[in-house]
Length: 628
View (cartoon, one colour):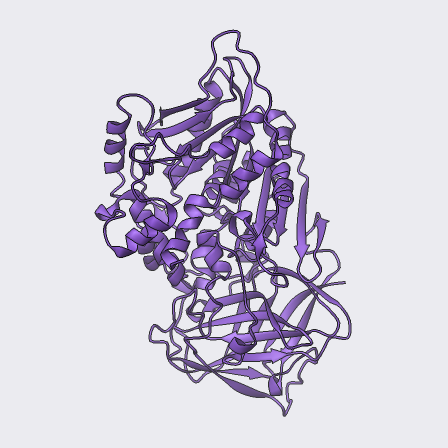
């Protein structure tokens, strides 16, 4: 499949797995005999927001539901059209599988096109913008006022829909009583678009093309050029339009609504212009869509939260841990071996595969039970916080109420001569202190199916044996371990770096890997940093949600070019991981100056070199959270 085709899988199909699960997990209930007027099973209509913008909404009710049915409601707000129709066809039903599953449980299911998208009116002034997120409040008020509603709403969604579901908890709307965001981006700047200040340029450009097609931005359609034709063919968009609302005026209203979308904000423009975290251009900013930046409002709302994320799904696991440690809300958090949207098993020690029906049903049942407690029922959140996590190379799930885990001890492994990695701390006057040359290699990346790809496609995560790639880079490896070593949490790498050439706007990437006795190298996690963002702030300036991350602002005012010829200490956060290194295996740290598969090249001409120092008074090391 082409890259553009792959990109489309996330927005238009990321929820398919969840939809199928709900259908599997719940046997349809027998319809009650109708003995009076009943509500429509599906109604597509407009709901008017306080500023006059009309949102297209699909309302799915259980068959035979009557006024006074007292139904709890699931609400999804969608960026990628709530439903599609084709010439000569009544439509594909949109979220019908989801709706059927929830209707069978006695829930109403409401899915809305965000303002400026689908059949809704308005213009999207910013991706995950404040106005679009705020609409979940009036939508929930409207739901609560319906004769069939019990006045309680649970927000959910996958990916973008998960982002809006979680951000809605900051609105303080008393009808929103629970949220279950799936594979969501807690902080879009750090956890997805610019981790370590580096743009995921190869991944984001095709995604922006998708948005242009959906919004007809600049007149872009499936027929604009060969690339757009491939995108639409790969995902079934060819000939499709958003489903109009019911009634004879629906098609005309759709045309009028879509005319307002041409001015939608362009994600690529923002991604390129928003180099630093403090970027702001009118309503566009990185902070407006960050749950971390709205932590006080989320806590004040007190909405209980169920979250699911994959260890190898971009930075979503980092986001869940930031949520768990930085927010006091009642939480049930799960971090597992999943791709984006939980379609595939993503355990680097096992082949990628689709999740089984049983695995998907177990995941879905958690969400059902959670909403039964807080949306169907009126249970009050009690502040209980649990985190369930899966450990690679062991296949075991564990549960904790504290993070970092009790018994965690930071263990430093120092870089040394002959590419060794060891626990021996060098003496300041160690004569074996030295440095190794690192050149930017524009061919040594993480492959087409890495963690950054799945977040924008929903594809499987698959890292091949990295032995050959490591041969192009700079690796440091321990001796075979004499005992099992369990690493769980957020590690970091501190390097003594001297820029040689092309480094003023350079970058570094680091990879934590497992080396098996047979020599196979397994990717575990990674970190990256635009070297202009290397400044470390005072720990007291780090907000609670960043307590697991190195204090760093990523602000334009703190950015400085990386000098040449003068050693600098650089600290790079690793994405969190849970892994068991077995006795006989070795731990490896690999250092690179580029990852061309997922990140922009810095510098842009791909020419840079560094010296990575080891030993002496300023040793280089990786610090791992080892659990005893």
